[in-house]
Image (cartoon, rainbow, N blue to C red; front, side, top):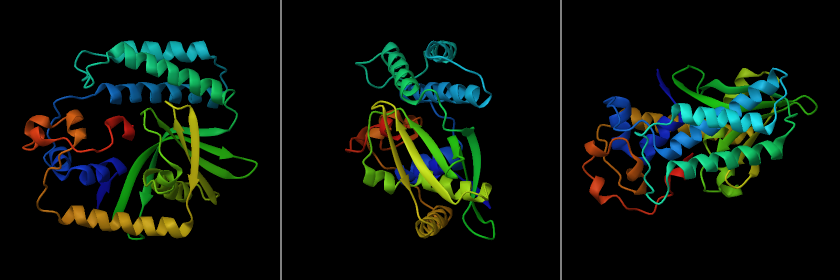
Length: 266
């Protein structure tokens, strides 16, 4: 049995060579963070802190949330974080984070939706024999006691706003909903919720049991493909600019496809 994750599967689909460098060869990436990834982590950690306080019954205000984010940013930022878009500097991204926190806080205060967990590790079993297993971390889980609906909340700090059709076909949160149904016996109805922070917009979707069964088989087939792969070719694209394995890749100079920018995926 090999443990997979949504990001590991996506890495193979995005670029088999990057997958090999990261998960088979276990090469150390040239950079630990891009500024987009760093911003995403700082915002996620701040929102996690907010909801942990609420779960503990501690009342917080917007100023406290902004102060927490600022302290976190300045304590962890370093000069090795790569800024690919030369027209922007670290202050630009820092201020974007401030905007995200303000929008989220004012839109969701007083946070009375009954969050029960943040950054929850979840195990997803795709088959009854336990051969195919995934793990993931859910940004936030909500349990509505009145309707008995469970919600999987995910924060997006990228500038790209997905369409409803894209969300209805999104794989990551759908996989997490399988884990929720396994971990919470009372979970009969699970909703998927995305917070697109750059747009201050919340969007939702859900899956039928039949759709989840089809997804399980799709992921099993993908894992079988990965496990049987012998050659791991490189795929060039705009994401190569943010790749941590640039110096190892033979196609780096040829990257330039019209793929979505990096922050579409954050």
